Image (cartoon, rainbow, N blue to C red; front, side, top):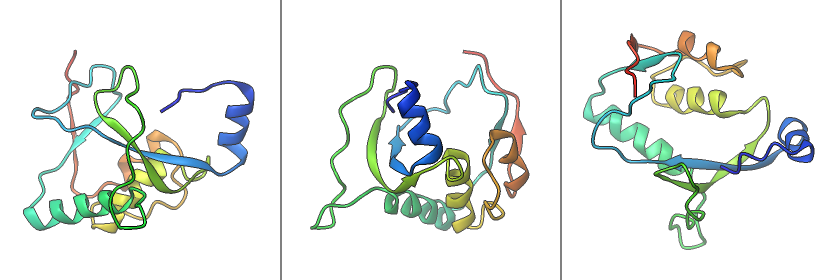
Length: 136
């Protein structure tokens, strides 16, 4: 969210548990992923989609009355919003691990243990197919 690459911020991200965020961005059409190294897709039935959306919603921090915590201010270059998330960010619990863990919880991926790098994600996905990436 902050794209802060100052030495102290990089040190904190690598060695100290730091605050985590969840990014939400709704789209009416699939995103154009011109620079993506790999795009994977899978059609979901309604119960699986509901379970996945529920899992994502559970990741957003809640207020004392159970409502979603307010989103952070808009960030330039992002059409969606960032929300405070439960859990802490750490190099061993990065976005790749987090994504596989969420998919695992609803039966769409194998266990996230050991996932750190992007190239480790495809081998954990269940029932997804690699798509030809579209140019922007």
